[in-house]
Every structure is written in structure tokens, then in C-alpha cells.
Image 1 (cartoon, one colour):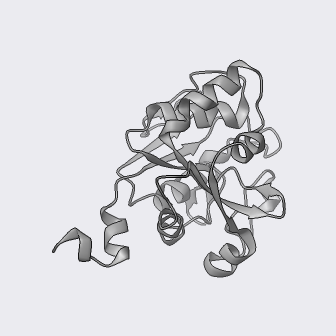
Image 2 (cartoon, rainbow, N blue to C red):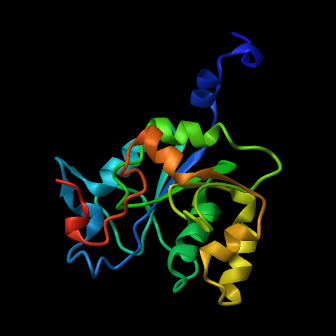
Length: 197
């Protein structure tokens, strides 16, 4: 079949993209390593990795080992989420990188495909928005942002919001995304009781 005439969903399944799961936090509020906490029969990190099953590669960004997973540490320590994003962009092989936290078990393959539908050559991120707030995780970033992220780390400018608002991006309405893909879509479990029963 000629790629030009393929249905959009088929094209998206053939599109090459990277998936990166950030698992570098200390989980202090959660009380244990969130990534390995078994939720509904599967570790939280397993749910997130499964949502990225259609990716050409899946990376785990963490500063400690996880058995059975290839882990990439932060290349610039101390920058929290921005450090994880930098490492994800540095190690990714594809132009578009889906970035999520290890405690976002309600992301799905359909969600990522929908986000990928909105990628364009003139933007550098696809994110969800709620008012003036842009969701930094559960988002797509272009690999070409690696240099910009590093500059911000070196300057101590660690706010991902500032990065997003300073680059060309597409912001999709968070409420509409939650209506389409589930009310807990962007939930991240800071505390154990944040997870629905």
C-alpha cells in the first residue's frame, strides 16, 4: 500500500517515535519506590511502558537500576523533571519523544497515537493544558530541544513550564482529553491513596 494513501491510524502505527519513562524521583511522599509498586496486578512503571508499546524504543530514565529494564541515568543531576527530560532527549533515537512519569498508569496507546496526530514540523512540543498550566508529563517533545534544555539546566532555570511557554507548541485541552481517554488520564500518584481502588 502506498504510504501517502494509508489511513491516518495506519500511518501512526508505522511512525517512528521514542517513549521515555521518568523514574528518577525519591518517592518520599509515596513511602516506597513508586515505579515498582504493584497496582492492579502490574508495577506502575509497567502500565506506563505498556502505553508506549507502539514506540520504536522505550527508555527508562532513572538514577538507580531496575531489574530487566535498560536504564539511562540523568546526564545533568539536580534538575528534577528537567534533568529527566534532558536525558530522555539525549538518549532517544527518534525525532519525537513521548515523556511520562513512572506513576501515570492511566496513559494509553490510543492517547499517545492521538497526541502524535498533532505533531508538525513547526512545533517542538504537544502538551495538555488546563488554563495557563501546561502538563509537562504525558507530553511529546521534539529531540531538537535537547540543547535548549541543557542551556536551561546550566543556567539553573529548572521550570518546565517556562521551557514550554518559550517554545512553539500545541496545547490540547486537558478536560477534553480526559473526556476522551478517561478521567484519571493525567493522574500521577504522589501518595499511595491517590490511586483509585
